[in-house]
Image 1 (cartoon, rainbow, N blue to C red):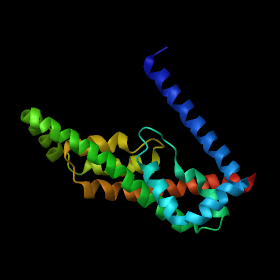
Image 2: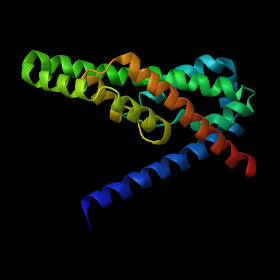
Image 3: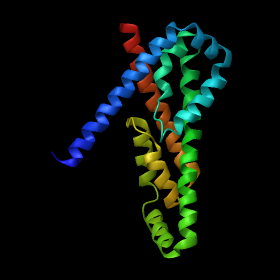
Image 4: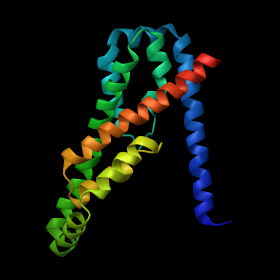
Length: 187
């Protein structure tokens, strides 16, 4: 079998297991007095810091938006949940950008010629990758760092990337939140 097909199937299986795991943890949290007390105690602030960790999810991709039904169940506002999580995830993604930028600075010290080539690429394709970043953040259930780190490395402006990531996160989180919410309400 083709290695690309095996890789794609593996990634799909991992995504399915993450979704199943989040749904299972969500149901466990809803029934757990311990999790309810902690979440009620820390509320939006705790959710915000958890979203930062979730936003920098290159190593541990646990989507915090999967806990949307739990947050709603303890009485938090759906709109504020989505906004809080989206801002936190954006800050987490900014760490990925900084990793890319640091990599660029290391290469700059070693190989100025390569950095000049990267600058030409960035100048030639200035807006398209930002739109692609928004589409990716909006619809792809994989870590944003897959694009954020290379865009930091290529020298795209942090502000432009984070605007695309923020609005992409809002759309993605809204679609996922209300999709998951529908699953929980129908069961």
